[in-house]
Image 1 (cartoon, one colour):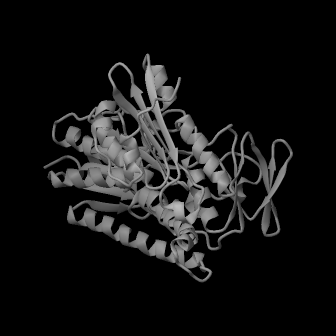
Image 2 (tube, helix red, strand yellow):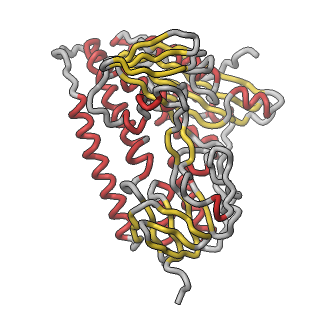
Image 3 (cartoon, helix red, strand yellow):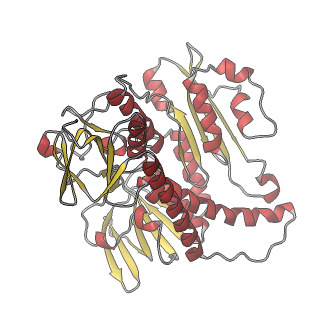
Length: 451
């Protein structure tokens, strides 16, 4: 008889936590998962899934407009925000039930409440104590807000996904992927959008050409980009808000949304008290096998604040089970992980940016292409697609692939396989393209961009 109630207690029932718990249970481990909210985590309930559903909703505005060039005559479309939110919520309820079924079918106990780690083998939930040989922290992240006057009037992406009323004007503070995604959503649905941000360009960390290309496309759509701007305060004025900038400019708006980053959701979990090392922002420090400095306490996903992507959390959850329950120490390969930004137009990217490649390698070749998508030749839309390949010259290896434009995430997923397999530019060139498609451009770019 084990001295512990469980072999594993997971705190956090998001994508990474559920994957790890299910896999461990399938190996015969006694598993419990702790969750104070609904099961599903950030991606399913407050992130990628509901956000992309709203992105799809916004695309219909473009499609209705573009259809005229293809001979369609439609009456003025009518949009109902409340119906969209109701449909979105219904889908989230369905997904939540799917996750609950996954746990139930795999005999994972669900402990409702906030979990607090008491010691390296004990978790307190809703006043009760549970023991386990292993504790896995998978609580993800949470939007962070600055301490400025009036910040209580701002919403984050959490609230923006379920607004009761669609505003006529919105100011989005921040310039990362969440900011530009919501800017595209709201603009497509008829909202006047202004993005206010401290930096000189949007999307810090992305390839410079990608940043410039998306900024130009956002401005074509009428989105105002106020770079080099810092919010001093937010003041409620009747049913609207006055946003005062540090330079004394005042912007009027119906809603203020902050998208200035997220931080690991570790506050109050008791981790520091038992000796787990936390970074300055609250992130849990783990080794290459996802174990903390306290033996038997592990962490996966956004709570470690490394590569904050749902598929990465899922991969880490699977690697943790291999290490902890199959005696097969397993590392996650973090090289060449594809990612997407569901902006308008979307971005797909994998591998190194041009600046990263030039810093890492002695010489690189860069290939770029920009064109109007075929879909828009009859509709007249001015939106451009941009594609870029970065090649390490001495080996001919393709080390970076970037795209802005229609279907970029779908196309770059395939490019991710190529980079993971170590494809060369010569192999790209030897591949016959699918015509007519945008994707074929990745195998037909021949002219190097001059250094």
